[in-house]
Amino acid sequence: MPTFSFDEVNKVITIELPDTEVTCQQTINAIRDWEDELINLDCSKIADASGKDDLGGGLSVGITLRLLNWKVKFEDRTGPDWVDCSVTGGNLVAVDASNQPMNPIEPAAYVTVTVAKAVSAATVETGVSGLTEEESQQLGHITSVKTKTDNLPTDPASETKVAVVEASLDEAKHHGATFEPDKESLEAIRARIDEIYAKPTGAEGFNI
Image (cartoon, rainbow, N blue to C red; front, side, top):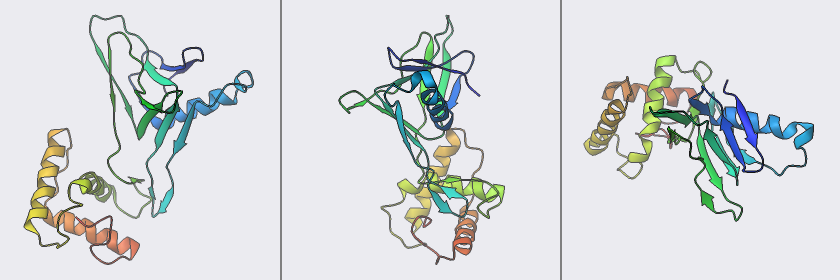
């Protein structure tokens, strides 16, 4: 669990050494704990959080953490080597005092920060949804490429659509994905999802 410190004057939340990764859930938990301390009760609200709505079958909406004129910072490093840090597990955004979007990351010495953006409409709790671990992994890849196939023909036999899915999976593999299902695997997962939710094949949200 990362260690957080709060600078109320500069409105900066610092993830202290030696941590290099933090999730949106860990961050909002730390914020609410700090706000609940008696000495901080007169402080203005630091952030809003949304998501995690239960969609049934072990599915929930991803988290969006919206900082209110605050920023997140990974503690300064001494260098000369740069340290890669990351914020994962949802979407981290921020607005300034005028409610205008701003960068949620405060710069730090010898630190580079990657803020991962959630690309799927839902997250999967493995073992709860009725899918096996392998099926949940495959579903993750299907939802991650859904945005690239939304505007294509809905005909399951469309070779164009299949080609785009396969190209998207190749791209995911290039960026570190370890699973590359074939067309039959994708069809099997879609059928499995339809079975769990009692929806007809090609139901909205799972039609690839």
